[in-house]
Structure formats: C-alpha cells, structure tokens
Length: 309
Image 1 (cartoon, helix red, strand yellow):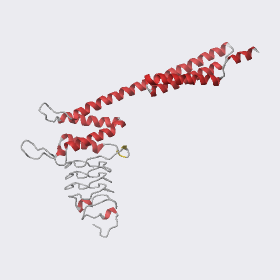
Image 2 (cartoon, rainbow, N blue to C red):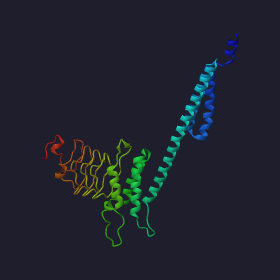
Image 3 (cartoon, helix red, strand yellow):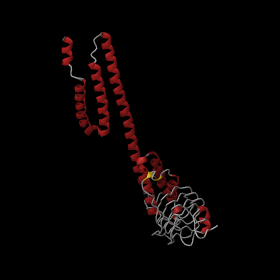
Image 4 (cartoon, rainbow, N blue to C red):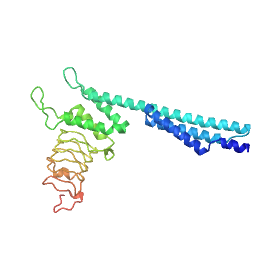
C-alpha cells in the first residue's frame, strides 16, 4: 500500500509534460519580445526538451544507490547536451548577425562610392570602380542582396549612359562613347559574368533600354529576356550571348558582332544595322521577330517561302 501511496503522490507523466509545455509557451512568449522570435523558439524547444527528459528520468523513481547514480549521470548528460546545443546555436547566430551587419555596412559604403566626385564636381572613377566591384562581391556572397544590386547597376547605366546624352563637354562636342567610360565598362563586365538570370536569382528582366552601349562587351553574357529596346549596341560584342526572348525593338546593331548569339524568341522588329550576313551566324527560331527585309537563316530550321543560304 505504501508503494501505491507513493505512486498516487506523483502526477502522471502526461500531466507533468502538459504543465511543462504550458510553462514553456508562456516563457517563450515573454522571451520573444526580448530576444526575437527565432531565438525564443529555439530556446523554448531546448528548454522543453530538457524539462521533458528530466521528468521522464524522474518518473523512473530509482530505488537503489546504483540506479540513483545512473539517474544523476543521465540527467547531467541531458542537461549538458542541451547547454551545448544552446551554446552552438548562439555562436552560429552571433556569427550570422555579425556577417549580416558587415554586409550591410559594405553595401552602404559601396553605394556611397558610386556617386563620388571631387570638390569641383568631377567624377572620381577610381572610387566608383571600387564601389562597383565591391557590389559585385556582395552580390556573390548574399542571395538577398543579389537582385537589388543588379537593379542598382542597371539604373546607374540608364542614368549615366543614356541613349541621347543631354550635356556636352566644354568644347561643345558630343560626349565620348559612353560605354568606354570606366564605370559603364565595369558594370557591363559585372553583368556579363554574373551567375543569375531570369527565373534563377532574378525575379525580373534586366532593364538596359534606351542606353548607349556602343562598343560594349557582352560576349557570352546571359541576357535572357533583357530589355534592350532602343539601345545603341553598334559595334558591340555579342558573340555567344544568350539574347533569347530579349527585347531589341528599334535597337541599333550597326557593326555589332553576333556570332553564335542565341536570338530565339527575341524581338528585333524595327532594329537597324543588322545585316543578313551577320544574322546567318546566329541561332534563332520561328518565334524570333526580325526586321524587314531580313529572313530566318536556313540553319534555324524555320520553314519559310524563301531560305537564305
């Protein structure tokens, strides 16, 4: 009977676990406002694990000295393991927070470098180049910052290399070929060797419409679906570039090199300067919209009334 009385004084395992869960919930809600949701949840889970484990061990009710010693060892191992997991989590979280803070600081500093000028208002290209390549490095390290950086760089090109520059130099002559500016050249280099593309890291298409990109080097670049409508791509290097489904509406392609470029589904309606000879070196399909009087080359495999050899 004494044994039965002892058992009656002990709450059931289920009741004890429910009580601990309720307490853990209350504590987690309090901790969430102080430590943040993610940290509070991890701490709550670890605490609940340790408490439930302790209850289960306690419910065994060891009778002998050996069993009590084993119980103490087991309980110490459980609590020690929980403490170790907590320490590892907080170490990882601290490193992550520090890394995010460093990236944010580098991002802000790089953006500031993009607009650097001297006391006379002259653009400091050496500093701007540092900002551009720093942004490229951040884009490779941080998936969250990748697309915002691509948008910043393309916006920079649209602002600093417009199709029709509004200003002239001091002698009243037109500006130099804008794509030869070191900052514009650096950005086209970054865009050419970036790893993402539409649907893979890039939720939208690159917008380089109405920009002066003459002489730009986009060889082997992934410009899938890019907006290049109205862009000046004269004498540009586009060998091996993926221009499938890109908008090249009314783009200037005088002297552009398109060897092995993929024009599948691209819109070249109204484009100027593209010759049949250069077009014959490209890849395309029945969905490629060509300017008149150009025709799909025979190697495209498109059925037309007249095949250009």
